[in-house]
Image (cartoon, rainbow, N blue to C red; front, top):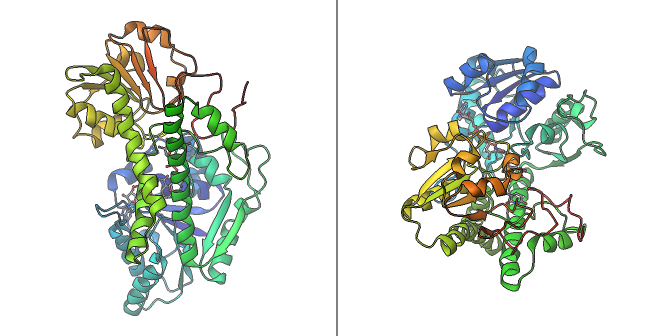
Length: 467
Ligand SMILES: NC(=O)c1ccc[n+]([C@@H]2O[C@H](COP(=O)([O-])OP(=O)(O)OC[C@H]3O[C@@H](n4cnc5c(N)ncnc54)[C@H](O)[C@@H]3O)[C@@H](O)[C@H]2O)c1
Ligand SMILES: O=c1ccn([C@@H]2O[C@H](COP(=O)(O)OP(=O)(O)O[C@H]3O[C@H](CO)[C@@H](O)[C@H](O)[C@H]3O)[C@@H](O)[C@H]2O)c(=O)[nH]1
């Protein structure tokens, strides 16, 4: 089976490499010539742990192009993975999707071909795509095509594991088309492929559930899942604020509620709030979809409000201790929106650096992988680049831990505090486990001083209450 992936960003690249690893002939297509030439040269344009090794293993089955004429006619499955970034009013921008679909339509071959939508798109988009294809089919005399919605649930930083060992595969479309998709995904559904050594099958993992739905339900599942996760984090953050008021510890509280299986321990980590390219965009998109139907979604609005407040809270905690930020030097540890990615979209660190600049402070920023991307994408921000975490901290009046990279978890705080001018530590990701010795000041989210319980970034599975 031949597969074409349109859009080789975080999702398209992972999907292309994963399907090639499973043994399919895959063509990756992108309109960005720079991306395609770097892929042709064997270099990945993004950082994703383990992806380079999988690329090596899968490369005999992969080729890259910018030409639709070269990629569409022979494809049995055409995956659309282009971006759907938010417009200022909260609706997703569908111009890339429409452009891609119109280009695909011009090169359909007349044989049965399935257009698989993996981009996160507003409810109803699958039907709209069908109409675009029908328009073109009349012009180009093609007729055998179907549209399937197959939303993607991978997380950046763990994309390979999420793709090879998914919880579920959602397939929206006609029974013929979803049947074809089941055949395509058989190695995943049956877990019959040889697990790559660097992405072993998780212990206890068996196989994904397959959920067959209508196009519309599949689109709704994707948005609703992201919005639910976003509001779960906002709930943890709201409770964290109350913990600070009453003197409770959010780690203990989150563990205590999360160990109820109906609630679950994951996505209860309080901190700087959620960022990234998906949660904000998709929650807004669901709210605006509601608006289009005159339907209000107060819970989702509140989740967004809490998330905005969370970012402001970090600067307020800094102001509480540093008071006058003008002329002060503030280290910002972490720029990516989460660890193990170079993705800077909607990263809390962006807002921190912006706010520090407005308050007259100098931000000295360090990130283990995202700095080259920040140099290209954050040209509107003023900050000083540091070559390491300790270089960022040396001489700083205060520090904000914005991203919980593992190298920040293992910092020797006693040593680095000694190199700082001031000793104010705003740990916006709750990674510091031990109290810091006076005169250092440590502010975390939802707790007064670190206790013994330690909350991993994306879950509470490792927490032993009272340990
Ligand atoms: N990033 C994630 O973790 C993630 C996870 C699940 C779903 N999604 C969804 O998947 C979609 C893609 O997200 P992403 O993060 O991979 O985006 P991205 O911006 O990293 O990649 C999109 C790619 O599409 C290319 N492109 C745009 N228009 C094109 C066209 N007409 N023809 C060919 N290529 C074109 C761009 O050059 C870019 O390389 C979005 O809808 C997003 O919401 C993302
Ligand atoms: O308990 C938690 C868990 C996460 N976060 C933050 O939430 C954001 C998103 O994290 P995560 O979900 O791990 O990363 P993404 O790569 O954005 O993945 C989300 O968005 C993708 C794009 O739609 C979906 O495919 C995934 O299923 C969904 O988890 C990040 O800023 C995290 O720091 C928290 O603050 N607390």
